[in-house]
Length: 366
Image (tube, rainbow, N blue to C red; front, top):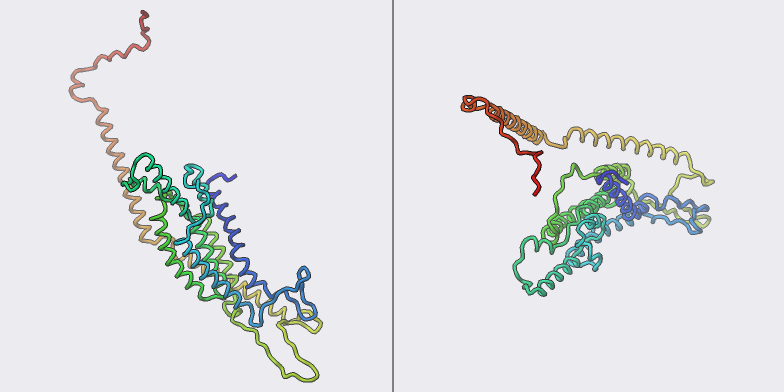
């Protein structure tokens, strides 16, 4: 059990992000970093459950990964936007809009993208009730009745999750698909209008709650940034390098066959392979530390709050403190004046004390 609601929401957010990370990134990560690396070599191919491991084409896995990213960044986003505008969802969880207390938690934990059918059904039922009592369905409604007919606000959890996943696609696999940031920008332009229409015209007015920050989303974004730095340590060079197939003139005696590997004649790795591996590892470590150091320096140089805003905040705090001190001084002066007796009271001398109501006098019994 979590002691606070903030810890519960952070833990829930992290778990959902891990599940969505596996669902969305498992295929691109496999194609970009693992496919074709465990094939083996001629005469000793690696197998899994009796099936030979798949390998990339002669030009590498760049084309396959770029195609998958285009489907995700273009096709999937267009389908989601069209579905959000035109296609109503199936009639599921009709009681969600009517739960007063536990419904907020259920709405926050829900993963449904829309409740258009639910809102339509709720409006239909309210109009039916009005017809039964004799009221006109087209009669003027009060603002709170019109707001009640809208869908309940589900929070911003799904919006944050969508943006974080999009940020991961744009940063981790940008070397394979350089147009991904452009497609993300175009999608966000459309998404801003759709979200504005959704929150203004289709959702109830949300209850404002103060928050210090966006919670665990900042550490998640930082983790994605670090992963993107590691995945792009070679820039676009690794993705642009195509396999060069050299064809030797065929002779009657033998045919030459080449494959990409640094191996000896007996199949073991050669010294060149280990030297290149050490150089790559050293370059990754140096590149990672340099990029992280630059990011940390920029974080220290660029303040989270501008200096002008800090000055205004301090001035407001000073004025509020000064006004509070003046009010306390004014109240203290008025209280001292009230405690001092007037001149007429001093001339009359001490007045006899007015007898209090008889507390202990018994009530005569009838």
